[in-house]
Length: 124
Image (cartoon, rainbow, N blue to C red):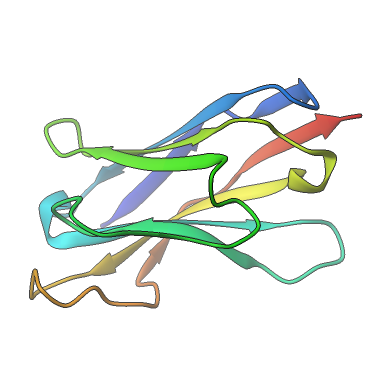
């Protein structure tokens, strides 16, 4: 059974930083592209960013580009989301996601598995 467990959320002031972690178990981590999504109260879940299985390709939403960085440690089955220069509008539940990537040259969209989410609150 594939499990994704996020951690690292919390309350931070505007302009501050947080690093989220997501540990994956029950799957061959190096076969999956990983992503981060978020959902604010009353809004739909939205894409934040994603990283390919070998870290060669990374993509971000325009709203976080230049402030957020995704990375992964394949030895630890962990993907990270470093969030800097946080804004109140970044307040949301952040979800880790995994997408099977059988061909390293094809960077797939979509999601096969979700984590349970971690709350990030940015105060003004």
